[in-house]
Image (tube, rainbow, N blue to C red; front, side, top):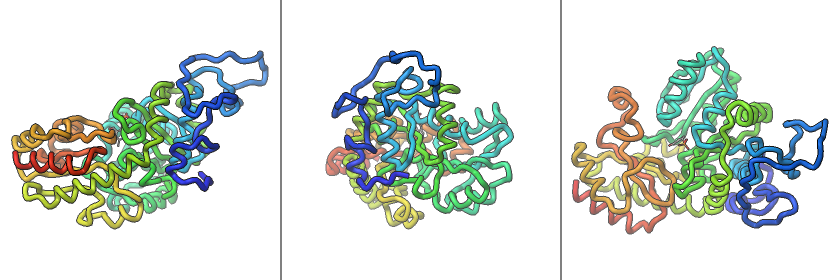
Length: 401
Ligand SMILES: Cc1ncc(COP(=O)(O)O)c(C=O)c1O
């Protein structure tokens, strides 16, 4: 557990013990990019092994195993997630596949939120279930009783996202953690949508938390990466073995550098993302051309009370249903100046995305209908531009509808 007294904003930039550790003997204030793939060692040591290698003492052997830039990032990620240990991966997907692999064996069973990121859903069905014999039951985890009803003796993993994509549905992490614990299952939470400043799943009882650092943590839409953090030492050792030896899916030094750089302004950016998103959500909710707005910061969100309890901010992503058909939605998107039509989220620039034809197009129409993803639904990642410019742009585009 992170026992530091320092606050989140300090941990995001600090040069101290919990934040980043430059290579010993070199007092860089900004951690440099260490590109070397291999490191000279002082002498042959018959007692040396991978397990005894201590990067914090400057002991590096080969960059797949540990790298000074990545090591500095991993310390900072652990500090920000309130964890003992963290690892940086080549993508959010790499972090998730490793987190799940470390928790399941053939014949095991997984319970997951039905409203998961599409890639994770496909990973669970097409890879873990079809190839490895690990079955998943998808449930509407807004209701913890549904999670509990799906649990089996062989359930070894419960996998949640909150809020979900693109409908911003929540699960009660503390309540789900109690169910997972009762069944001896690992609880993993993908915290990509809000990040560690506003929601800390490990403190709510999760065993492992993952982020696609591609989104808020790096924050500048110029790096693909992932993070995993945990306080469970045995589980961490398994994840580390899989990353180093089983999969080799670690983050490259340049991306580690970019993510370290991005993290320093995470608290500043998140405050602005959240205040802009609140303003955009309120503006859209009041507009006559809008049928519904999904944002946990709105008092009208059905789980607003839960959001206020388990999140200290509501994040920068919302979705909106326009009261028009696909042509009207296309006119709205084409009329926007400050919201490029693009997938992904969490960068400083605002983006708009059409789930039915973009992120959720691999799902069948029936699956989309059952999840509530209509053709008139748009997801908006609200950036850090000036609030007034964003509202004026949206207002202008709504006139085109
Ligand atoms: C919630 C969530 N988890 C995981 C991922 C996958 O992350 P990456 O694209 O970095 O592999 C995404 C990507 O959009 C996501 O939205």
